[in-house]
View: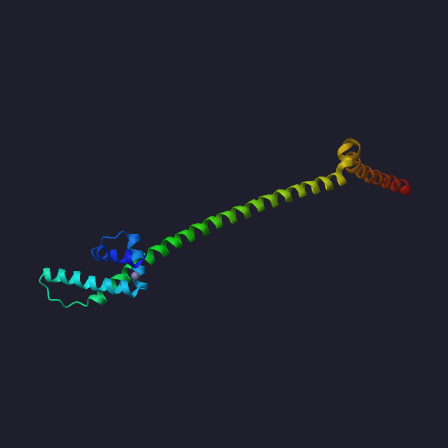
Length: 170
Ligand SMILES: [Zn+2]
């Protein structure tokens, strides 16, 4: 905003006739421009003084301090609003990042579990086939061999022991 624009907005500002964006632009200008601030101060004192005289009140106000307070208040309101908007944006971005990362980790976990299951399956198949393929492919003969044969042999030896014992006794 140039000094000319700022000075053409002075009266509108004092009468609360500027829209928000224009008001903030105007206030930032007068904060950094002594000429325009002086001009504003003069108009403010004049206009507010006339209002006071109209309402027959004694002119006892410190217009300059009043104006400074008003500018501070209005700039602060704007900053609060801005920082609120900014922090909302930051929160939204963080939330999106959080969900993206959480989703990615979840995805990796699924991949990992899938991989582990595959490895286990392969290992399982490997061990299984290494130890049991023989029995699985010829079940009748081999399974009979493991289960029945030892029993038969102990039985035989048991009977043969008895036979031997009886033979010795006689
Ligand atoms: Zn200026």
